[in-house]
Image 1 (tube, one colour):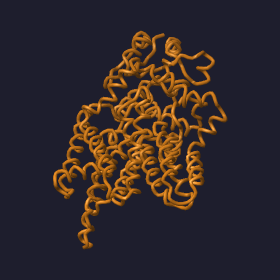
Image 2 (cartoon, rainbow, N blue to C red; image 1 turned 180 degrees about the horizontal axis):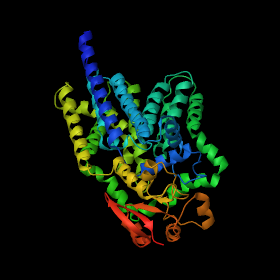
Image 3 (cartoon, rainbow, N blue to C red; image 1 turned 90 degrees about the vertical axis):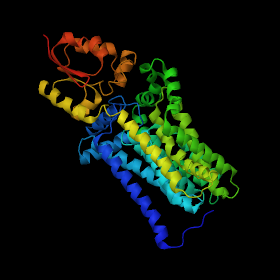
Length: 490
């Protein structure tokens, strides 16, 4: 192993490089988050937070097939800072930055080759921060808080194995619970952290640590328990039944879709580099007899977390490439070991050029991804549409729209339209549909025919044809691949 530098100036300069790189990344990511980050699906998450802020209750008052912690979190902050999409983007991006910092700090403190610690921390930080899906989605929905909860849970579990008391174990459970209570996509991490922590415990009572972890993980699920006590049928439907039976309605060829997603890494340079380095790093760690066993088990924990989370999100049916961003921090830890092993194979212990090459490839990959998506939707599109819709819609008149437009206009959607994108194909008996606040496609069409909506905004040609919008309204205008209809025919 390399020895540390003896001079204060020699040790300070690399750390300054690390802090500078992290600061630059944080600034760039925050700017992106507050100006350009967008995904259509985040609309219904923000509408849910808006409804909670208005006194509505998820599951009971509107359909929301997600664990609700992140929605309550965003609702609380938007009540303080204003009903604006930039508020949850700021919160999520800060959580993502926190996950990057926690991972980089772990490598800085724990990587056994001192001469590689700073460089490895930079490689881990940018391997996560410049990852395409992390950069694009880390500022939206619940991904940021999940990344932070998983990274913090990992760090606390590593600490808990040597602790006599129960507090680190409870804190690890709390962080894992925060991630799972914000999105069930991250739930697989909790049993992995618990089993690893109990199995490798070196101090204190294993049973106390087990109980403390279990207690910690239950705390963030308090809203779910409260909602289940009040409305067990609605809670069960939103958290389990909807995902088991109805998500695939919108992707008829779900198996083919999933296979395409699960093999998309073949065409993704970042995924290939990170995956190959992580696999090489794991193989290198397994073969190292000079590394402390305790340290090797921490790298094994990273591997188990990556495998468990990959298995869970891969079985989401349908799954999406962005779900795998939850795996990235743990793959990045292993990738640092892989990069070190690769440099040793080429006969060099100097980290500068290997790290620079990998970081440059990640930066180029991110740049290409952002360039390819430069013409995609963003919040400014809906802000422009909102101006026109307000011009042609009488005050307080019912509006048919998509969730991002409802949110930008600060309008409460009509009952049953809180999740317009993913519920109209759900076919339930009338009484049950009313209980779940779900409208069928036929009911939506009937409401249009009855003259319910003064204005309609849609980006779906099938809706225009299926609901007969051209025959129902006298005037229309196209705006950025979407159409606004108003002035109903009598």
